[in-house]
Amino acid sequence: MTDSLSVPDPEPRKSSDGTSSTDSSNSAPEPAGALADGMAAAARRAGFSPAADGEPISGHALLAAMGGIRGLVEAVLPGLVFLVTYTLTRDLIPSLIAPVLIGVIFFALRLARKQTVTQAVGGLVGIGLSAVLALLTGRAEDFYLPGFWTNGVYGAALLVSALVGWPLLGVAVGFLMGEQLAWRSDRSKRRVLTILTLMWAGLFILRLAVQLPLYYSGNVEWLGATKLLMGIPLYAPLLVVSWLMVRSVYAATATERPVL
Image (cartoon, rainbow, N blue to C red; front, side, top):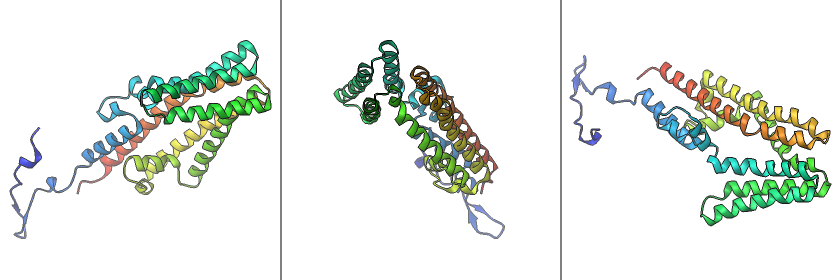
């Protein structure tokens, strides 16, 4: 590739009024190039590094965006171990000790390898809170209470933000793309980002609609199973759909914008 510093300035042209001007193609950035740079930077910040390099979103890219295999294991294994242990033993104490120990092991491994421990700490705090609640009440189903609180808060916040015209997904994407709140003045972007916000709100609300009846009926086995099934298996496809929709609407609006 030619070094841009070694390229001579374009020869000035005479305009109709006799003044000199340079080629307009060099005086303003092309929208397509600016879009590509913005989408690449946003993809890297969102964890889609392969997509930033022009590759299609693959299973590997999606896995990387969710923290890799270790991130998935740290997210899924404690809840799975609690469910299996309680189903087999019907004893609350060992069922609570097992996931807490797993959380401690994940934290210790990251600490020993001098890796980022934020995710492990967050998971350990969540597991500890769930275990304390279940231990205090003596009810295994209360192990899942923090998840209900999280889904309720996220679902309500996303739904309200979309209804009042400030979809939170739009705010997040705007800062990822480096345009802050400029997306609100574009009807297409605002519509797509509102739809995405409603879709994510729907995910959290759907989890509550399915899992709360199981909680109140005391059906721990199905409650744990639906929590696992409605976790990563629903989150991952929606993450991909969200990225594709954002990329599509930004590409469409860039082609509609006239070159100055």
